[in-house]
Every structure is written in C-alpha cells, then in structure tokens.
Amino acid sequence: MSDLPGSAADLLPLLTRAERLLSRRVGGVLAAESLTIEAWRVLCLLADGRGHPMSEVAAEASLPPGTLTKLVDHLVDRNLVFRRVDPVDRRRIRAYLTARGRREHERLAAQIQTDLAGSSAPEDADLAGLLDALIGRLDPQDRPRAEPGPGLTTARA
Image (cartoon, rainbow, N blue to C red; front, top):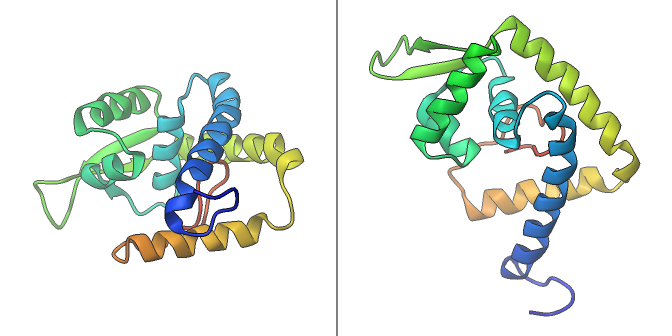
C-alpha cells in the first residue's frame, strides 16, 4: 500500500484509525452519561422515529443479537427505548426511542457536536459525501439515511 490512498483497499487502515480516534472522543462524552458507543449507535439509528426491527438494529450497531438484546434491555431500563411487536410481521420486534430517549439523543448530539467542533473542517461535508458514495459502491443494497447524526454517523451509518 502506498502513502496516499489510491483504492478502496488502501482506505481500510485509514478508516479504521479514524473510526477508533473518533470513537474515543465521542466515548469520552458518552462515558459521563454511562453510555457506550454501541448504545449511541442504537440511539442514532432509532432517532429517525420509524422504529427498526431488532435484527436491523443489531446489524447497524455491529452487535450479535444476544449482546444487542442486553444493550436494549439496559436502554429500556433507562426509559430511553421501548419495544413493540411489528404491526406487519407479528413475529418481529421493533425498537423505538421514548420521548425521554429523543430528548437525551438531542442533548447528547449537541454535546458531541460541541466537543468535536474544534476538530471539524469545512471539507468534512465533502468527506461525508465521499464516504457515503464509497458505502454505496461497496454495498449497493444499503439505503441512505434521511438525516446523518453527529459523532459516528454519516448519511448511511
């Protein structure tokens, strides 16, 4: 691999390092709230208000189903998330943010934005677009999210 990335394969170490550094920064903000990066990913996904099947939440949060169930149980205990039977497929369970969960997500998103403001640059929007395009090329089935969240999220994740 060269010093400058020239292909998607060359990006792997750079993206991995950037994700770890960003996770560490965001994790510092979340630790004060007794939340993990994985919990933040779940809250960000559910912030769209549509509710998501637990299998989709597990995939988006990159967690095995059993680990996700424990995490969501914890978020339910904190009154941040609730679960309901899917009205279309009664075999599935969908997760949603509670009103308190929505307020906490908005408050934490603002804290994370403030914390990262010094690290932001005008070209970040271009970078987010490029990463979104890369995701689209690597996973054509992936659908873009309506609104990117702060911290670890892009238009798709």
